[in-house]
Image (cartoon, rainbow, N blue to C red):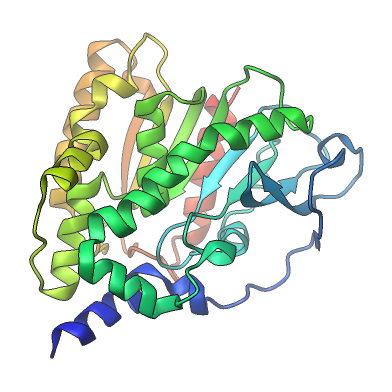
Length: 315
């Protein structure tokens, strides 16, 4: 088994399935083509509507319920299925939550995928998975989130200064956790599903999948220090009412292991308890749930848990 084959397998199976992702079955609401939102967020209808838009140059799909009574929830997909805005929406429409759901495309995915496709991403990984994949995708998503929020405010999808909700799967979960620590936007509630807890965990996953050691540099160590969330619990929970954070993992997840998550769990549990906000952090392990949860019988349970968390805390 040569190195090139291992790298390609890691990309195709675990990172960039968006390039060949299936097109999900159409939901009850059809996706309308729109270059801007215009007044879509304030239109009164009796039906759920989905609108394709660009928010601060970020590709997005908005799912707008007929009744909105809480600020928007921004959702990020991951590197493996669900690996696109539409696929994530098909898995988690969250229609039980009376908020506009904003499904964002990650950098280097979908409309922003490299011209070279899988070959280009294999090259990036082979050269430096930390600085050429993790940083532009995960930290890139964090950096562009404020422009998304400003666009939502400008188009009447939320009031200025409101706290959004955040959801992230896998690498999208990493972006959500880093966003909580960076405080570039205000967040009231967040859910992360099978998240990588930072660059170190992502590098471990890369090494397990390919059998190749990653050669750390000063730049990648600096990036790990900024992104490894177990060390940034105090940055997330800075006051007496920190973001309500639900972390969901599966006991069948072979990509991000329990060992990778244990220090994060202990750090967050301790910090939230210290400031008297223990009820605002929850860590749940679901039996039989794999990393990408394709075909998992736990799908309905996931939907219910996520919706219940936002309905409780996203105010």
